[in-house]
Image (cartoon, rainbow, N blue to C red; front, side, top):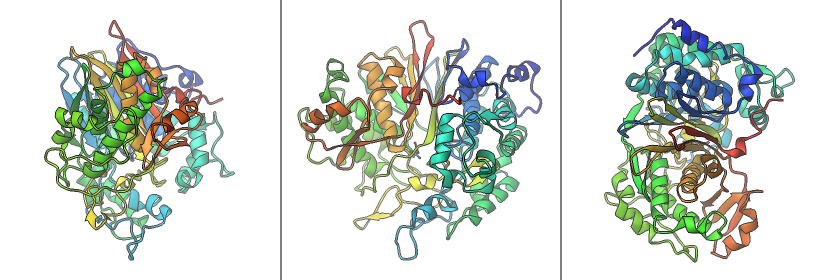
Length: 571
Ligand code: GLU
């Protein structure tokens, strides 16, 4: 690994612009000559763009974005959490995927979230305590990806984030609102209160300069020492001690859980959709498989002819979701612990047989998991609610290599525990909280050393000539694969720009009902959707997606979900 303590002068110069200057925070995301970056925060995008401009690879820039987001979007992701990175080679299309998913302590058991009587613990004991914290994975992932695909010295990747944390950044509306909504969690510790809240106990106002000196110091140590500054004996001992002290019952984290953490290279999952190839993350994420299934099951329908104004399109999409999610509930979990029939689940004949179940005129009365090759009988877990502690970003570099990276702390501000200037995740709540259903163990139950099932779906789409045409992903827990599949349909079938596709209405099947966005474009279509047999409810899903789309001539459209617009201003 390339740990350089001193940076080359031109690189250092390139970062002098990483101050709290308002002009940076206000600028629109833009394609840069050396590549392109799409992230949910312009300051994080600027970090990635500066790395690209300095000759960094897509992996270098993506790491810099992940670090910068730890500072400016602490509600969503950071080095106290984990993520999945999909890298696609611009020359030969080769895919490499990295799993930096948080991991349960070795002593964790299936009863982790239950009391001595087997009753589910109260929400705050589960979420805002050490019980929910998995060993953070993002730094280990970054180091592993950098080792293979980094161009710049490791320390250089930290410069933009160090400047943001040390010199400060302006509070924007989104962070301010998040802090206000999540006051208890975000302000759980005096250290976090001192950073984000005023003396009156209220979040700092929009436009206030926020400095996170402890995080600047953590970054400086990581830059100088490499991942050992988090996973080495000393740091691991201190972090484990902190988490264990906040853990109300057995199953506490130890230093060995942290020193033993490993980011893993996994096999990518790919499937065909029309003339395109869609690739993404396999287990422990359910995201890539769900996206491939939803799209593949719809391949037999002419969606382009229907278009997004036609309720029938949304009906078909809902049915495809129901079929894919029935499999997800049963089969998807950490494949190091549970036999996940990955090949069977995405096999073209299986996917089209599942798609054949869709009735174009009416909702199926009941949808059950299928029997893909290699599957053992299983029991479904309890569906989880959407969260909003996640972020997605996409990078393409000058050589045309792409990175699609989804990074998370799980819920907003993770567990609320704050150490070294960053929030610690509550990712372990992504396990099925109750280990059994109808007397049968569920695949995604807690086990020592296991990684909870994710919905994150960092994806890359190739055209028939093998060129990367779309780099895409989203935040929002189980809504993620739906957002990604819908946006791919928007680009591929409806011929939309990436931004228009990300801005398409949202609909998702949850349990017995289908939910649509309150105030969204599908509300006037409610009666027509109900006429297919769907029960329609409204809610406010935490939607947030980012993408890069290849334009003719080889430049890139930088797209952000239009729902985010106006939320980045700090006036
Ligand atoms: N923890 C969730 C997952 O890995 C993501 C949470 C979110 O998107 O807000 O699927």
